[in-house]
Length: 228
Image (cartoon, rainbow, N blue to C red; front, top):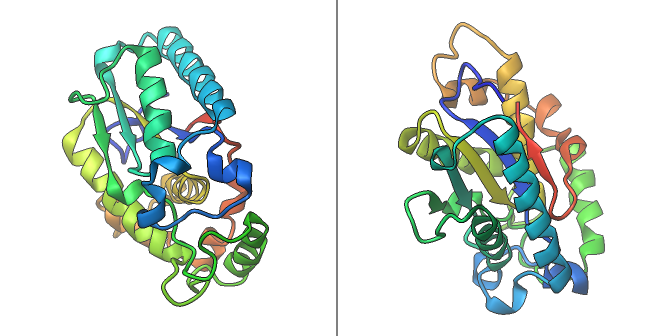
C-alpha cells in the first residue's frame, strides 16, 4: 500500500482471532476483565491468528516490504495480545522487542457496566443506537463511537510520532477497528483548509453522518485488511 499523504506509515488492521468470550457468547469489554488470561483466544482463534500471520507475511513478500520495516501495535486485552504473539511468531519478530508495542488506546470499546459479561446478542442494541446517534453513550460509563474516535486519534498520533515509513499492523477489536477504518477513509477523502495535521483532519470528519456508518467496515474474527 502506498503511504497516504496525511500518514507517515502504511496501516493494516487485524481483528483478534476467535476468543473464549466469542465462543461463550459474552461481552468482555472492560480493561479489568479484558486482560484476564481466561478470556484469551480459543483454539480456533489461535489457528485464525496463525493463518492471518501467514497471509500478512505473503503480502509483505509480494510488496517487497522488509521485516525490519514492520511494526505490530496491539491492544492490551488478552485476546489481542495473544493474537499479536501468534502473528509475531509467524513473522519471527520478538513480541518483547522494539518492533512490537502495546497501545492502551487500541483497547476494546467499553460498552458499559450493564452490558459487561452479558450476552453478545446485546451488541445489536448498541449498534442501533450508534446509527441514530454516534455521540450518545450506550449507558452511563460506556463509550460512544465519538469517545472511541478520540482515543483512536491519540493512538494514531502516538504511533505516527514513534514510527515513520513503516508498515503497521494494528491488532485490535471489532468496534475500534470498524471505527478506525471509518475515520481514516473519511479523513483521506476530506481536504478542508483547516486540516493541517492528523488530529484536525479527523476532527473535521467526526460528524454523525460519518460515524454512524462504522458497521460497514465490520471484520470477522482473525480477518486481516489493508487500510487506505
